[in-house]
Length: 329
Image: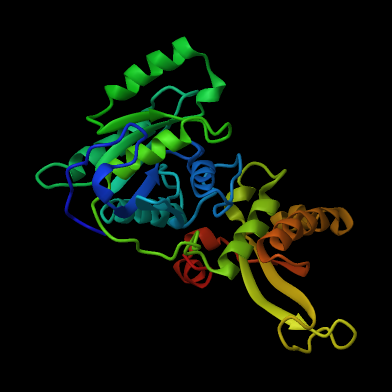
């Protein structure tokens, strides 16, 4: 990531820069929980690289999505929602966001069009202003998300309020769900990036490992239909992905491509009562989770898999440093 900021070049009217300039860099998407960062990441990349949910604090890692264009390569960093932490996990997620902001070329500050600017937005803005005081911090683009949810007049007023929040380099209203202004946003972000060569191969869309993506898809499936504090208490670890003999011992590995692909994973919760909710009566809910996750994993891997899910209790893992470490936080 470059600390140097380049002067944007001229454009030919389509958003592409003239003179064959190539730009590349890192763009962090930040904002409060549930402002559409992960949905936007997927829309920009053109493939699902980050899970989405209506539950707050779904994103727990800085997930990188890679957009490769003729004139640029944009490495998106989808960050956890900034919030008032109640657990050690929450503190670590906020720390991760601040660390990420100090390492990128551009910050895409996501602000939902259907919600008034609140204390959480002002808190993030203050952090960004402080980062740019006394040194050359990242460029900051305000991304007003979910514009499909309100009328033009209300949007115009909201954009004026966003403009007063801080000194943005650009403000771009978009709808990731409808695909509105996505190309415009990519052009705007490209102009803010430093000149530089391509950093990743053309066909690479994310830095996430296969197992990380599988564990996230399982967690996404488990989040559906749960409420209260349970979403925050769910963690998933992929124990192994192994090819086994379809006609013999289910635990005997065989050569890749010759057997049945088995994914074995563990869903962790914090209390016995939560374990019962995840499993459901007669295992009904766990079957639903498995079916939903298996469909997504099949699409990810391009083949059918057998998903073996277990549910275990890791008491108060969100507050336990050792257990957080074991679960990858």
